[in-house]
Structures are given as C-alpha cells and as structure tokens.
Image: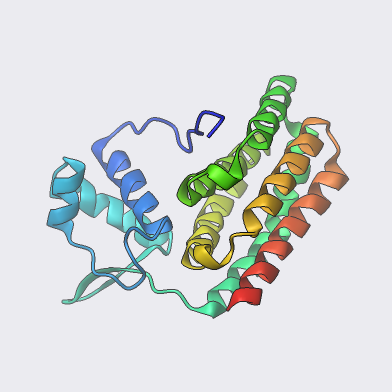
Length: 222
C-alpha cells in the first residue's frame, strides 16, 4: 500500500469494547464464517480477556444482527441469504445518500479538509498490489468518515450496522469481484470530494449510485 491504513473506530475504553470491536471485525471479514458456532472460551483466550467481556460483546453483536443465540444451543455467527442483499440495499439506498448530503451541508471546514485529504489517500492506493481484506477495511473507513461528517449520531449508528452487513456480503463474494475494487476506489474519491466541496445534491446522487452498483455487481456473480 502507498498510504497508511485507516482507523475505523475510536480507541476502546473497556475490555468489553475491545472484545466487541475485535469480534465484530472477525464476523464482518468472515474470519468467523456465517453459521459458525461461537466459542466464548476460545475467543476470550485469543483476545486476552475474560469471558464476561466476551459475553457482553456478543450481546451487542446480537443487536447488530451479526450473531444469534439459541437457548441450550449456544451462539452462532448469523447466516447469510441472498435475500439479505435486497433487504440491506433497500435501507442503504435511502440512508447513504441522506448521510452524504448532510455531510456536504453540515461538515465544518476542518472536516471537509480531512475528507479531501482522505480522497487523495484513497486515490493513491495501489489496488493491483493490495491485499483484498485491506481494501475492504479502506471501504469501511471511507463510509465511517462520511457517516461521522453527517453529524447525526443516530443516522451514523444505523448506517454502520447496515454497512457492516453489506461488507459481510461483499466478503462472501470477494474472489468473484476482482474488477469491483477499481470502481469502488473511483466512486469513493468522487464522493469524498463532492462532500468536501459542499456539493450536496451531487454527493447524494453519487452515494445512491454507489449502493446500486454494489448490488448489481453482487447479483452479477451469484
């Protein structure tokens, strides 16, 4: 990579937060496969924390629809169905443009400068020589930056949840989507620069097309 990686989240302030973020990333990136049972003890040992923080993290992840618990059976990574793509896209196609427009309208000058700098960092990525998982982390990071810039914490929370679910779907078909990365990078650069320039309508249109292109790309390979 030619640019430093993005920080997706603030530094965790508790062991439960640390466990939540670590397990969430494993679920999103499919290091824990859909339908796979969750072993509390093994996770606690691998993360260097006790079982209580892990259990607290799993409760939060159940709210995020990334894990599901069954009485007397245990906790499992949520399964994935192609119907999830339509359900997630239906929400994102409405809310991603809203966040992009609000960011373009509300972001202060310093945030606009950060988004413009982020656009340059994304543009500098050497996609052909980059690890695909790292590219996915950049994708997550760009979306997180836009959600924060919209300055609506409730909208941000909802979009993070559904972007996480969309990323799981993306990772499932990653090997078949080798040509999508270049489009994603170009779309991210254009979207970030539209927001930085305060072009609200253009930012909204670009965000909407970004979501729709993703859905079309997935459907083309299934």
